[in-house]
Length: 111
Length: 113
Image 1 (cartoon, chains in turn purple, brown):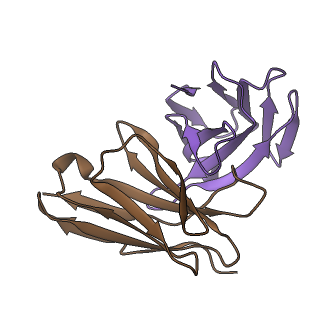
Image 2 (cartoon, chains in turn cyan, orange; image 1 turned 180 degrees about the vertical axis):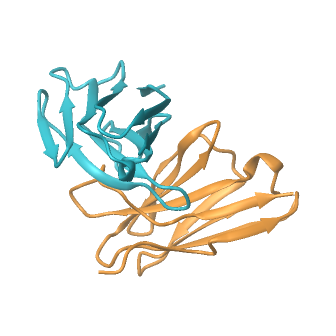
Image 3 (tube, one colour; image 1 turned 45 degrees about the vertical axis):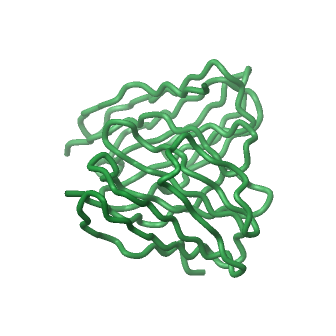
């Protein structure tokens, strides 16, 4: 059974602080996605990483894919209240549209 | 381009009833996946359809079924509802060549009483 462990589960920080969310698996991904979900809505795709060691930036968000393609991290610099939401990592094990999702990180950024 | 549309958004059923949820994918997307989201289990894969064929199925009982039509629209059905089926059911479509990049609808919130 493929599992994706995401940590931390909950994160409450002040505006302006930095944070990192981790996503780990014992299996190799063919690709990994990060999604963000707000209450009452479906997850929205933030980024896809495919190559081991890859780093992608999306404004204040930096995504890294581990060299062995088994882990990933999301780093947010100078968090803002608008970053509040549920962050989900999802691994694609080359099984078509079947993704394995982590449990999610509930981020709250207080002004 | 219109996003993924799911209907109904909210519904309340009682145990033993059945329910059908509908999903219209983004135009041009032929792959449609369904996920169940609960606070305890997170997002769990139900099944995936491509060109009217089920390509993948998750570990859910046979009470959960789905289908896809020639226009790529999809439905899922849950029969003999149980209290534990209360969840947000999410449909997602993906473009060809990008199987991990899912575009989700807003979901159908099912409450079973």
